[in-house]
Length: 207
Image (cartoon, rainbow, N blue to C red; front, side, top):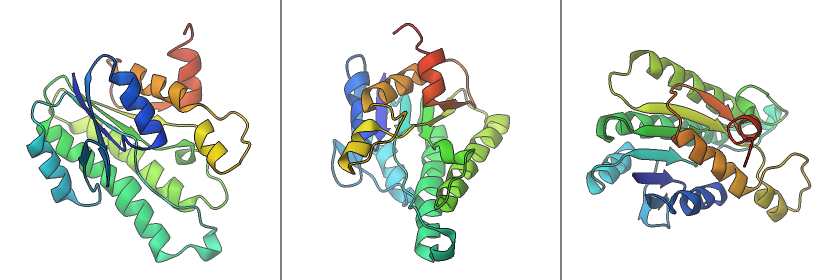
């Protein structure tokens, strides 16, 4: 399959590219680096990406930015970043993907545990993640093309925690996170939300 991994130069995205690249043609897409560059906040940039890559089977979004900010100090910039990048950027990837992907293809988006488990300082992140998951459920009801659309909720990534010198219990390595992305791309279900911790126990119990 030909797969575009948006955010393919980040910690999770690179692990996904490396793992899927063993079996598929995988293009690592970044904002300023990688095999190809795209700005997910600019729909025209996404449209151009699909003009440049024909006959794509799937897209994986391992990107989407939103900032931590206590409620009393939340700024317009914090809100705009969550809405325009984490939420709208991935919405636009989905909408353009539905137009251009081959029948039988797939779209995998990324949210996080904040979609259902709010935490202090994470209101903007929760807003974006919950909004994206709601949008995916709504699209599933009325889409008219045979394309699977699913969402993955990553856990804290071990490598990221080490960069910030944090010790977070129950973090998951980038490699194990990538294993979940691979498993989800191979499933036949659509409109599902997959938690990485749960998937490691249920989708990949014997690996």
